[in-house]
Length: 283
Image 1 (spheres, helix red, strand yellow):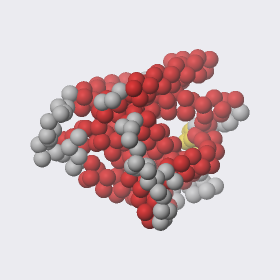
Image 2 (cartoon, helix red, strand yellow):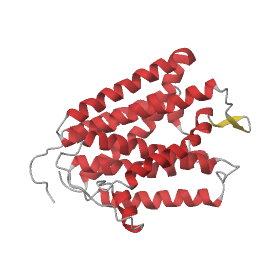
Image 3 (cartoon, helix red, strand yellow):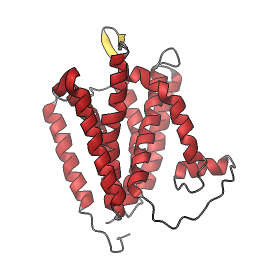
């Protein structure tokens, strides 16, 4: 329980879920095929909903946080992303091609259409006086919204909090990247895209420095979620610029590498679960 290992472990676990999540989506498409990928994705989302249900009933903060996080990842992949895949297939949306290669898949071409829904639903958090989200609390202070806070006697539902945090942050930054990739809006070689890359790196470094000061696993995991996703923006942009090979979009061709990533993910996750709690952490 010594700092900075709590924060580092939380960061690594959340980081590994990013390539694994991409690989799971590709595997569902390849293994189940067009006819069965949507039933498979539906079942995946149902499993996520069940995990979220277990987490909502669990009073242990650490377990509830993990249930909420993994449940959200399965819900996002199974229900959210594949709903856009289904819509793209249904509307016969072609992929975006450059030099004979697919640079943006059809489902991601239509995802920005959900921008209005994202912004409208985020008003709930912005105008919620009981939010404990650091970002929205900062917005409320700096916008001088003067939202009245009401005390709530019930214990916070950490599974739901973690799940909504994960889904909304993924959703928000997906749309940010897709909008800047669109050449009719900005373009992936535009100076603003380079600025997003730099800001993502600097912002995630700042959050990581704060993260390694955590001494409890559950809040560290919840803080690691935005830290990793913001850092992953830079990873995605580098992939867009062809700086490296994104092996997670071809998991069947890189089975060994993805197997090693998954094994490391399991090991680190088990370490976080076995992290002692209940005693005062070593400073």
